[in-house]
Image (cartoon, rainbow, N blue to C red):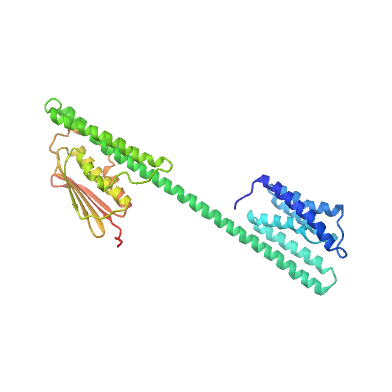
Length: 371
């Protein structure tokens, strides 16, 4: 339920007071002859309800009871019917909307009993039946309307809560995605820089040309990591496009700056969803990173096969042909990270030794093509 600010109660009380006092004067003129004229006591009773409205937030039940008692007294004394019922209507409705439904229904029942007893004392049986039906119908109709308003308010609040939770969930997923993207970008490029720097140091004296090639690769990789980090972090800026930072269209660039002897094969082709493109790219990237770390000098084959319902990814290396002075132990998260990416899309990934080298094989489900 949307609660009104405390200061609004004063304005509501003033409006109710003006309506009850001013319109009751008109009601008194229209009911002259069979209802008592307004006097100072009548005006005091008319103002009790508006004053109670100001206190309803702190004393909801007590202020409602006081309002109803003043209304009972006003009616029983014989003052004119009309706007005097506005304050009790407002107070009972507030109880329902604030969750005190049982109290509201009990007080409504008491009010119905009081008015029925008062109507029965009039002596005219036919008129009493009419009053009884009218009073019962009015109170029941009002309480049902109050309940419907409460239900609608609660549904609106629940919908708002669900929307906010979904927003928080999406924000959390985006943060996890960015963290994973940053991990993959940094892991690949820093590993590549480390490997090539080690190569350059190892070959600087004996093979300066190869050392120069390694340094060129370092320059390219450092530029690439800065660009990719900027792309990932741009999603934190308000209004920045939330597009993938990498896709399969950039595999040729990845292969070119990997510093490895890579053969890239594609079997078939079709448009892919952005999240699948990104996952496939990162799996190939991480596989190449592992080759650079653990199997320097090996030949690598990267094969992408677009099937009718799956995308097959196969990265195979022939095993290290250079001394392992170029690498250090990694974080150990490479293969689990690739497997998590595949599983998140409903796919599978296996990795293990094959012949003298190592092989990573992933299968990612593809959505049905639309004509």
